[in-house]
Image (tube, rainbow, N blue to C red; front, side, top):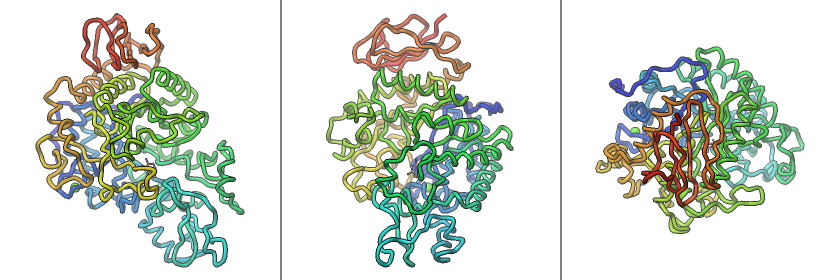
Length: 560
Ligand code: NOJ
Ligand code: CA
C-alpha cells in the first residue's frame, strides 16, 4: 500500500452538493501517468504517489479513464470487469487508498463508466459465445443471423465508428454488432439484466467513495432493432431527433432517470457527465438534473484559435447550460484528440459547409509523421497558454487533460510497430489514431523514461519530452506549470457565482468578459498588440511589456 504524507497544499473536501458546477477536473489516463513497479505501464499506486502534485496544481477533482481489467484493445475502453482493477494497475485496495488520499487532499474522484459495450473478454461475452444461438446469454448483446447464402453476409452493411464492418461473425455462424472495435461488442440495453448490472456497478463505486462518473458515449446505449433493419444509407438519411434507431434516442433517458435515483441516494449526490456527441439542441436532455446532470461541450476541440469562434462557443454553451440548469464544461484536450498546443501551432483547420473541420484537426500533420504542414511549436504553446487562461476564467467546469499543464505537444512520429490505437489499425493510412496524446508523462528530465518509471514507457517518449519535465518547470516561474498553478489558485479565490458579462475591448481580435467581483479576463487572439483594459494585473499567459496586451495572450485583471 502506498501512503502519501499530507501535503501542505491539501485543502478541505467541500461538502457542497454542487461542488462539480465550477470544478477544475484533471483527467488522468492511468496507464500513462506514473509507473511505480517498472513494468512500463502507469498504475494506481503511481497516481497515489502524485496526489501532492495534483493538490499543488490546485485541481478540484480527478477523472480516471478506465483502470478496469482489460485487454487494452481500446486503451481500457474495452472493459472485462466493471467492478475490479486491472491486476497490472493494482488492486481494489490500491483504489481505496487512492480515493482516501485524494479526499484527504480535498480532491474529488470521478471514474469512467463504459456502458455501451464490454470487452469480448468480459465473462458475459464469453458465456454468450459458449451458450450459442437463442440463449439468454446472447440476449445481453446484439446477435443476429447473417444474410445471403448460409448467412455468410453480415445482417446489414453498418460500419463501425473505428472503421470497417460493424458486425463480426462467431464460430457458430451468428453475427454480433460492435459500434467500435471487434473486441467491443455492444450491449443490449433493452435487456433488464444489463440495466440492473450497471446500477450494481454505480453503487459499487459510489459505496467505495467515488464522487462521480464520466459516461462513455452516453448517446449510444439504447437502440431500436426492429426488423427489417435499415441499411447504412437509410440510417444516414434519418433525422437524429430522438427517434433514430442507433443514436441519441429519447429512451436512453429512462436509463439515466434510474441512475439519477441511485446517485441521489448518496450524500453528496453522485455526479455524472455525459460524453454525448449530439446536436446542441439535444445537450440539455443529458445535462438536466433528472438525467446525468452535466454534458461535455467539445466545441473547443474543433475550434481554431480565433476570437469569433471562441466568443460564439462561449455564448452558445452558456445559453445551453442555462436551458438545462446545469453548468457547462470546457475542454481543450483529452485522450481522443491531438493536443491543443500542437493544434494551435498548425494552420487553421479546413472546414466543410457545416463549419466543422473536414479532417480531425491535426490528423494531416500526424499522417506525415509530424513533417508537414510545418508546426510552429512555440506559437502553439503560446496560444495554448492563452486559451487555457481564457477557459479557466469562464463559469462552468474546466476539464484538463494530463500533460496540458506542462504545455506538452502531441507525439507524431510513433513507429507503426509501436502503435496501440485500434483506430490506426482499422483505418490504415486515414487516421493515425490517438497514441500521440497518450505518451507517458515526463516528470524528471534526467531520469529513466523521464521519471515515468524505471522500466521504460509503454509508448515511446521522444527526446524533446525532457524540456517539458515537471522538475524543470518546478524551477521556472515562467513555466506553463507555474502559470496553471497560479491560475488555479486565483480561480479559487476569485470564483463566485456563474455570471459573465461581455466587455467591449475595442478590437475585433480581442475577447473580454467580466465575472463578479471585478474579475476581468481579456484575450488577444490576434498577432499584434492591443490596448490592455485598466485594472490590477493578476496573471498573464505571456510576459507583459508596458501597458499593452501582446498578441496571443490572456490577462486576468481586477477592476476596483
Ligand atoms: C469514447 C472514448 O473517449 C474513446 O477513447 C473510446 O475509444 C470510445 N468512447 C469507445 O469506448
Ligand atoms: Ca506499473
